[in-house]
Image 1: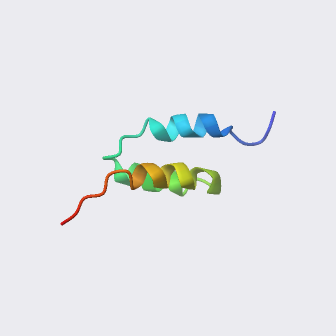
Image 2: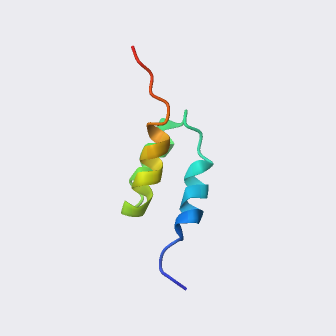
Image 3: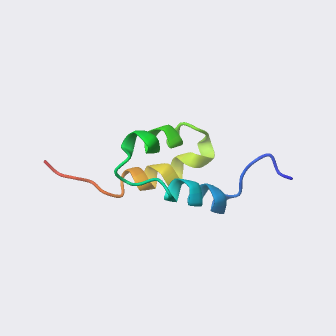
Length: 50
């Protein structure tokens, strides 16, 4: 068994986090290097302008 989770599993985990839960997505981006792209994509999926 590999010492890491497959990309499909991490995408499912991060995909289950709401885009409105910014603090959770920020924490997901700090878990490991492999989680950064998916969590960053979810984090910046909804940008609001002032």
